[in-house]
Length: 202
Ligand SMILES: Cc1cc2nc3c(=O)[nH]c(=O)nc-3n(C[C@H](O)[C@H](O)[C@H](O)COP(=O)(O)OP(=O)(O)OC[C@H]3O[C@@H](n4cnc5c(N)ncnc54)[C@H](O)[C@@H]3O)c2cc1C
Image 1: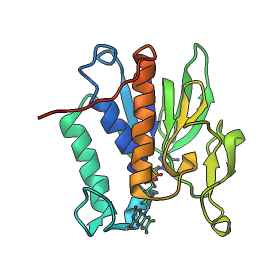
Image 2: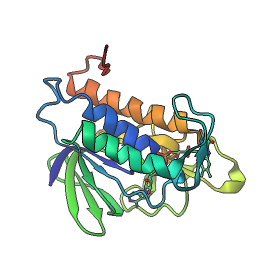
Image 3: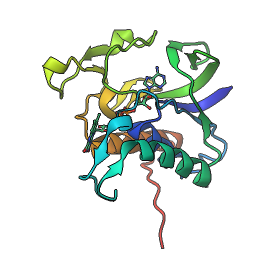
Image 4: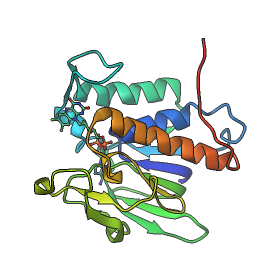
């Protein structure tokens, strides 16, 4: 399958990125775009988290419930976003015709843009990305966390990082904001560089 954008990672940053991209469907520069997310959630930091300090989340919301409700939210409101479940990405490689080749344990995908929304935990073993790996700038060095070298989320043309793997501190709101930020960067690019955001109104 060939995508215009493929998000890798189904945690906070990845799902928020997918929701903003999905919500732009009616825009003329998005209607023909094929958007996907590899929504493997086994290694998400949400699995064990409990949230009392996130605006808009009911205090004591469980992270594992957000993993489920996030997928449902995405499929009910934006079913055109392809959710690829349970596959584990092993490589993100440069390919011909300005496409990236994304290899999982089950399939191979091609995509013009790729958003890396994995987290900052080691081991990080994704072929094609190892040259961008560096120590995390905003985490306790004793924890040995990692990030992908980027400038304002952009690793290189068409390749983005968001959430903790982009070098942000591990807080739900920061990861979500980072995913939303990358989504609006991509929408702005698709909109010929005109700054773009997606708002619903009453
Ligand atoms: C125990 C705990 C408690 C916390 N409590 C709070 C709190 O009270 N308040 C707060 O603000 N924050 C809290 N956090 C932090 C918050 O959960 C994280 O900041 C947030 O989850 C980071 O989002 P992320 O998208 O960077 O990573 P994640 O949410 O971890 O998402 C990364 C995704 O990448 C996927 N993935 C990994 N490897 C692969 C692969 N090879 N192929 C495909 N997919 C892959 C994972 O399965 C996961 O879905 C807590 C975290 C933990 C662990």
